[in-house]
Every structure is written in structure tokens, then in C-alpha cells.
Length: 95
Image (cartoon, rainbow, N blue to C red; front, side):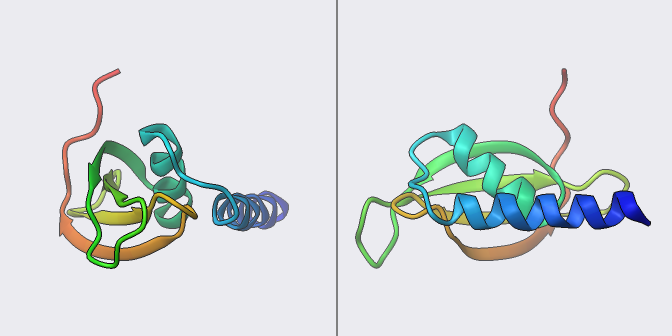
């Protein structure tokens, strides 16, 4: 039980920290998406956002052991998750 609580606190603190800083690299966007979905970020690519600003990142997230994954859109200027869609589970990264 203690490990679950520590894991949840870590997730919340990472999410809160990520929302305070700009998301200028694909690695930073992947970290935000992983913290929000508890999955494994597979790809991150830059996208333009309709509301202007600096644009954002599209991150595809693999969920191990599941049939569905996530497509997350992260704002570049403040690192917030602005959209999360269910997609077919993308293949995981080969390490």
C-alpha cells in the first residue's frame, strides 16, 4: 500500500512540475504524456495548434498489456496536456 501512495504522489508531483515549465523538447513532452497516462511514450512530433502560441507536441503512448493506447497533445509554451484521445495501441519502442 505504501508503494502505491508514493507512486501516486510522484505522478502528481511530476505532473504539477511539468505544467509549470515550457515543453521545448520531445523528451519533455514524452515525460508529461507518460506522467498523465502511466504508459510508455513511443513518438513525439511537433504540431501546430489552432490557438497560436508556440505550438505543441503530439505524443503517442503505448499501454503495456492493453489493446488501446493514447494520443496526447501537449502545449509547448506551458507543458500542459490539452487533449487525450484513445487510439489503437502503438507498438512499444524496441530497446
